[in-house]
Image 1 (cartoon, rainbow, N blue to C red):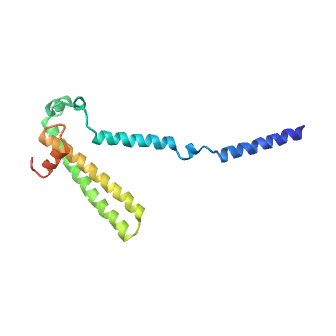
Image 2: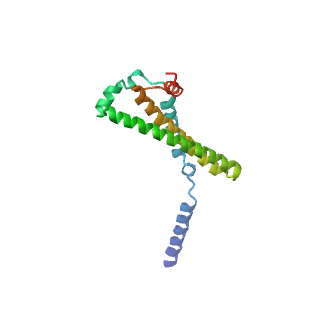
Length: 159
């Protein structure tokens, strides 16, 4: 009797091992749920960036009202404007340095993955530089809700 119970226990342990070792849940293996969730995030980000917004979504607060609401004086705005310009230049210099370094890694050392990572980092630095300079422009013009086109005009002093 004990022999039969022992064989049944051994069989149960073997089945348990194979169930855990060879779990045939392909949906989990391929991370289908994660892929769907990440795809939704990318699609929503694209819609937020490039989709047309309703007029009710735009914030209609003026620059002066926003500065008053935030308790910003002319002196603090001047300091903030200067800080935005400094950080914009810092990010620009870092982006240019990383951009050059990425091509050195690609052509000088034949390290494609290192090139890819540093190239992405340089793009990130350029994006940060744009963001900081955009805020600098809005404080300089004392206008909120500026567009990319207005930023380009400001950058090339056509405004």
